[in-house]
Length: 315
Image (tube, rainbow, N blue to C red; front, side, top):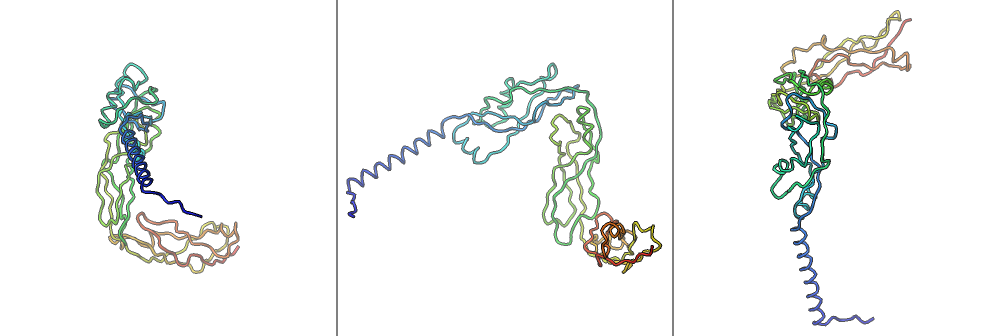
C-alpha cells in the first residue's frame, strides 16, 4: 500500500491551521478567565451586635450559601482550593423584630471579602430567631490535647486550666444542656517538657451562647517515665458462697509505667489485682484471668504475670 506523502505546501498549511487553533484556544481562555461569573460557596456564620436584653435561638442552620461575583480566574482558583468562608451577621435589627434580612446588610458582608469578590446575594435571604429567657451559668473548662511524646515521657500530673470555670450566657434550654466547654485541640510532637499555652474555648457550634472569658491558660505537666515492677496479692470476687477459694499463684507481678518523680510514691497498696469467680460459674473456664481494678492516675499497666491463674474451690 502506497504511503501518501505530504508536500511542503500542505505541511505549511497544516502548521498554520494548528497555530490558529492554539491562538484561538488561548484567546478563548483569556476571555473566559477575564469574564465575570456568579460563584456560590458555603459560609459559616458568627453574630455581632447581639441584643443585650434578649436570648435567642436560631431557627436554621449556622451555614448559608454566599453568591459571589468574580472573574473566571478566581472561580478556577476557588474550585482548585475549595473552602468554607466565615461571615459576621449584624443582629442589631433583632431589637424590634425576630428576623434578619441579608439584603439589608449586603454592604456589611461585602466588606468581609476581598475587593475582587463581590457579594450579590445570600441564601437563605432571611434568618429567623426564637427568643427565650436569658440565663447565666458557670461551667468547667476541659482541656483537649493531641500530644505525642519523646520515648519514656508522658503526662505525669493533672492538667490545669485558668480559669477552671467560665460563665456562659444564653437561652435557658441551651445553657442547661452544656455540662462543660472544651478548648480547641492543643497539639505537639516529641514533647518532653511541661506544656503551657493559651487555648480558645470551643462553642460547640452554638453561636447564640456568650462565653466569658473566651480562652483559658492550660498547663499540662510532662515528665520522664520509668518502669516499676510491683508484686500484688490476688483478691477473689464473688466467692463468699464457698467455704474456701484458693488461687495459684496467690500473687502476680505487675509491670507499670510511672513518673520518675513518683517512683517511690506508689506501692502495692495503690494497685489491686482481682479474679472473678463468676467467670468460672458462667463460662466454666479452667483458669481465671487477672484483672487490674485499681490503678493510680497517670500510671499505666504494661503487663501482668501471670495473666491467668489456677484455682481450687471448696463448697
